[in-house]
Length: 82
Image (cartoon, rainbow, N blue to C red; front, side, top):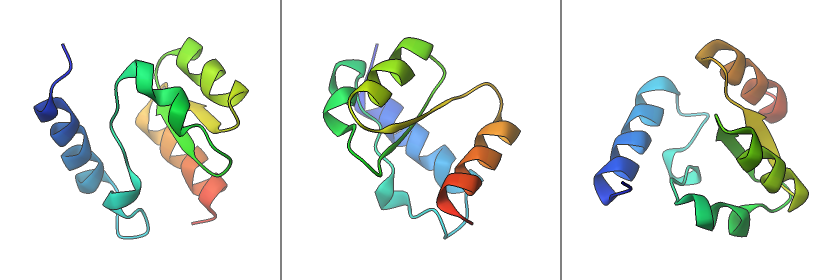
């Protein structure tokens, strides 16, 4: 079940894994039902569920289907030119 702590833990982990080129305030942890509302041009979703990525892309965002950390980070760096 989703909770405020889950979002906080995800954001903490992102902060630990990425450096200052990935500002923590640019990351949002949301419920599945809320995701498509954030799918705007320039917005990126990293998700391990293909249907979420498909829905995100259909609504105008860029989606990365997460399979492993190294490939997800590589793709993020390519998209963000860092």
